[in-house]
Length: 148
Image (cartoon, rainbow, N blue to C red; front, side, top):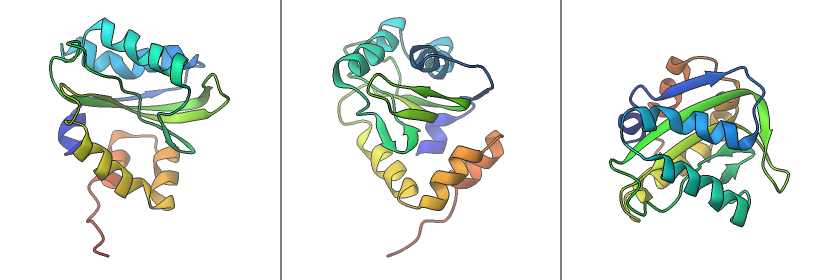
């Protein structure tokens, strides 16, 4: 499901950015495709300002998102890999973002479960942090699932 949502929404940046600029950069592919409005991006930034780094799932990897409030027109996701970490208001640093936009409050649960399963493997976390190309990200996401 994650790979279908990501489609061609991958971006790699060598620029030094603020965390707000990184959120905007991660959201840009979805904004350009008409999946979200600028208000959704503003809501994501506002949520982080109010609630802190709740979006950081594991060290250096975050899942920025917010309630739709009518500002998500199509469920979608983008991926951003930063060479230079951004630091959120409470001091947590991030180099990898999976920016999620869901049209409803339940639409992202399957994505969260899938991403949690992938990130449970510390090797996968490291592979995301060191990836330099879209193909490397897709290889991680398309690995056969381990049966417990």
